[in-house]
Image 1 (cartoon, one colour):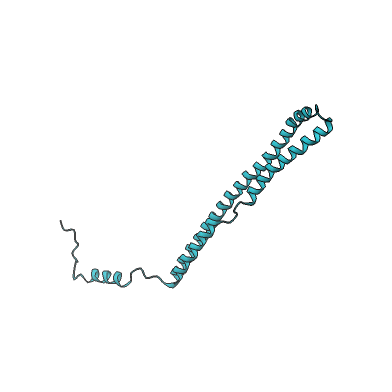
Image 2 (image 1 turned 60 degrees about the vertical axis):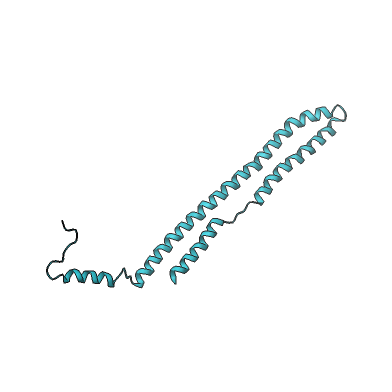
Length: 150
């Protein structure tokens, strides 16, 4: 059993096909290279848009959760004012006029509600809105494209 094919005839046909493959190692025209570059760049841009969309969605979800905390703090403050205000007002009403005890209780609960809402607002203000992953990826793409063009 012979695994190496022997050239048939004078062997010149086989030699010519080997010579051609050596002379033209995947040579592509400039047009083909630019076409490939355009295709790869287009794919890259689509991927960057997907990354940016995902990153924006992630940050929007975080902002939504923080907003829910602000609203939750507000709702809990209202419930607290309704339940505790009545009890404390009645308790203080034993030592002072009822209207004065109601005013003191209302001011105290308003301050607490403000503190809760303010904490949620502060968390939203400190949120980093930069698309850090997308910016980093775009810098990498710029470097890649610069190398490809050279």
